[in-house]
Amino acid sequence: MHTPIKEKGLKQSTLLNVRIDSITEAQLLNNLQSGMLVTPNIDHLVHLQKNRAFYDAYQSADWVVCDSRILYFLSKLLSVPLPEAIPGSSFLSSFYMHHKNDADCKIFLLGAAEGVARKAMENINRKVGRTIVIGARSPSFGFEKNEAECDAIVELVNRSGATVLVVGAGGVKQEIWLARYRDRMPGVKLFMALGATIDFEAGNVSRAPKAIRKIGMEWFYRLLMEPKRMYKRYLLNDPVFFRHFARQLAGTYSNPFAATQA
Image 1 (cartoon, rainbow, N blue to C red):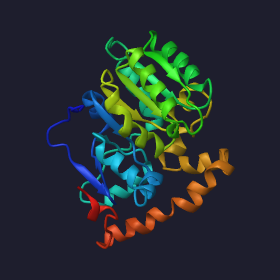
Image 2 (cartoon, rainbow, N blue to C red):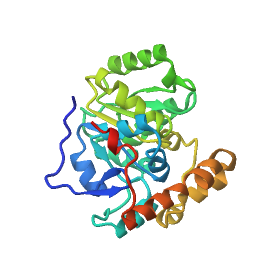
Image 3 (cartoon, rainbow, N blue to C red):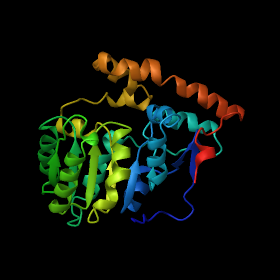
């Protein structure tokens, strides 16, 4: 079992059935040494109301940091507000630059389409000026259901000597996969589920301009860029969150998994 090191007295903000660390990026970088990190956004919070395996994966996480500017704004209505949003899509670059001179930091990238993870590895190593990313693998579509492929991935990570595993394989399945397999990779100290960050680092997908991200509208930019892929998430699924959040503010929200918690 990996035991994370956190600041004493670190507060948490409760959004629906998730407790999110009230932490700045600077604090996170200075304390993030081990454990499993997840980055909730609105889509995650919707799935956390109906997917027990995903909920259990979140409960096993050691670090839960706010990915969304919208959640950051809404937290101001709660007793413990969040100091800032820490988007997973940009946190990786902050992380590897923070550790650029740390020889013990050896990163393995898992995710994205064929060849994209390797391109991200090349870009990161060029920016850092050393081989901080020591391995990369783009798994097949639906790899999480293929036990033989999962076993091969675990073996590859173990052989690489990586101390940090970054998984960018899509929200929900990447967290469930990490919760299931992390204990089989004893050499890895830190596990991070960071969504589309491998695509961003490879230059395969462009992020929204900073001004758009600052006002919490990156979701709209992504919808415009990839309407066929993103419309269901942003226009059909995610609005359900606001109904649940209104119930939380009114004191009528209840955790759908509370009765079955161990």
